[in-house]
Length: 398
Figure 1 (cartoon, rainbow, N blue to C red):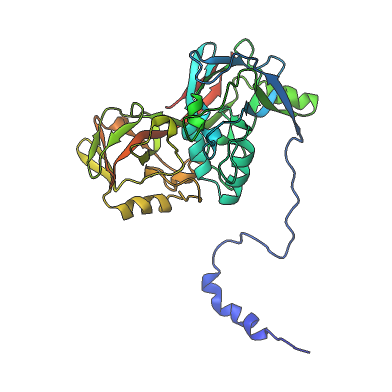
Figure 2: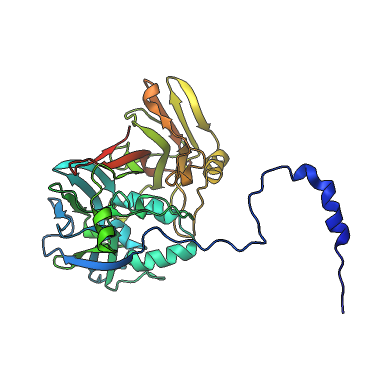
């Protein structure tokens, strides 16, 4: 039988008082308090067919209005039952490429427009391998090995409260709900589909999706008094999310070791980062995949001829990512970023700084790649989305 007597350890605690001068923050001998959520609720699914009007590469955006009977939802998804491909396989995570853009309107006025591929690529990059396996399989039609079989895409609708408008974070902040009652100003969604060539690895493509699409709404059911309280938040509802503004006009091409001096666009508002999505040149646009990114070898920003940040080596480019919390998984690689918020990877969950470029008359971004690439340049801005007393939904970068 063994015996331990830690009396000397206990007696020595009196000699460590200089390290115990801080406030008491936790008592690990007391069980934690069992808390509760403010409002109990249960979520149910509501599905509405979109008929045969929604099709690949629709020349006119498809308009969808939230049903008048809808009250409180947590999320929405565009469900696409995509037919099989004959002769080619689907791209990995093909659902990322199915929708080109989604535009939100209130009373006919644009609230904001979302580049769906850019947002979903950013979200997937922030997931662990285990999380990405589940998300890709359930939502994006991903299979462990490339295949041509029919599959279902569940493309998140970028509502203001959508978790997919943020990077994934291990936090308890949550995403909240969307209050659907906005009087006469129902939220309108305008959906622009990509060409069917964008989801395929080759020239052969899936067939028509007309009549194979529906809208899935995750409805939040509560006690009647709670439904009344959360469904009508006119004049009260306000939150902060992100906007991606593409600074370039589509894909641009640059050769190896060729400096790019970009001064065509000066983003407004609070910019948390500038990022470059870059892939190896020489691939047809429809066949490009955004999973593998090429990092710049140099990246800097200049304001009124004064260098603000200069990542002048490949090592500094990579350290900028790591020190700001941008890690990657085995499928989605990091893109090059200039960060203006501290630990910018988590700036979607709390304010940690940014750069308002209105203080400068001229902003120049300079970057260079060690190999030839096609690239897009984006600004990530914080935006406030609110519902006024009349039910009008507005988004502001100021």
